[in-house]
Image 1 (cartoon, rainbow, N blue to C red):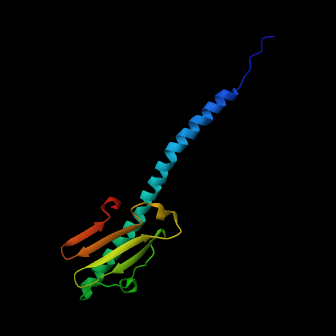
Image 2: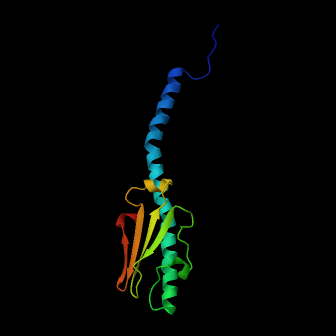
Image 3: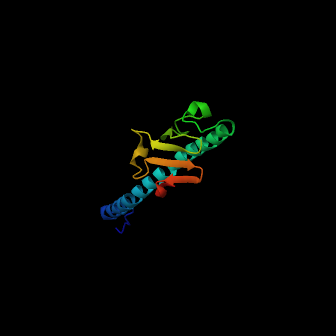
Length: 132
């Protein structure tokens, strides 16, 4: 009897599993970094909303505000990945800090857990530079 066997051998299956394991080991960390970096947009958006609200507030006031309720913004980013803080408000400058919320995966965004924009009369400074 000359019967053809159909299917995969155990060796072929092990090779496929090994290849998938290697691809996963390489791709997953890259994907994780991509996701963390893409979530920074949540911080950028929140900071820019504060900046716009501060400029609107400043039109009718003698200085910028340290109070989120004065300028009508929330201190939590839209997606909830960051908490905001407004500091050092004066007639010519203020600082907005977006800090990753403790207990969420965004705290694993090494070097970018705290994103800061300082606005002064001469312009704005964004730190850390690698995060912008």
